[in-house]
Amino acid sequence: MDTAQYQDPWPDPLTVNTFDELEAFARELVGATAIVEVGALENGAPYIEVVPNRSGARAVNIIADQWIVFAVEGSGGGRWELAYDTTGRAFAQNALAAVTAGRLDERVAFGRSQLTLTFEDGSTHAETGYHGCLAVITPQPGWRRWGEVRGAQPYA
Image 1 (cartoon, rainbow, N blue to C red):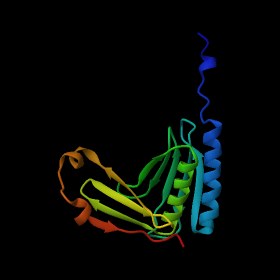
Image 2 (spheres, one colour):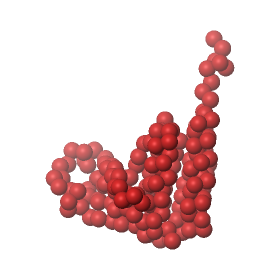
Image 3 (cartoon, rainbow, N blue to C red):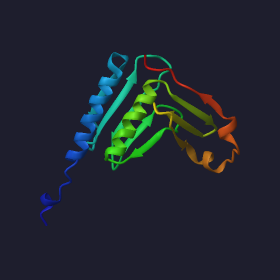
């Protein structure tokens, strides 16, 4: 069997174009307020890491996978899987703009957190993350009401 015909063309042109667009957007958005690092993971998947210069601001990772994985530095919440389409790219750009402007709140409790971004149009987008087995089996009723709230500084 000739395996050459079954080679996976990763990353594909759509992925490369999407990440080129997101990198250009990130560099223009943050200017000198952050470091934008681009590279590839061991499997060849591109990634973009945006690390703010200002203490108290949150870093962002954008990784190519089956989806565009958009993750905000924090306690586990704030990870979105986005499609490689106009809507997914627009969400990633709006989310990055919200983080750089400091328009986010994270509610944290034992083993869980929910990060909420507020886009420029006023819409809010929340994502919840859990850590470890105990977080899943340990009930914490109402944690989204009483958990500690953490904000973030804008990049500039």
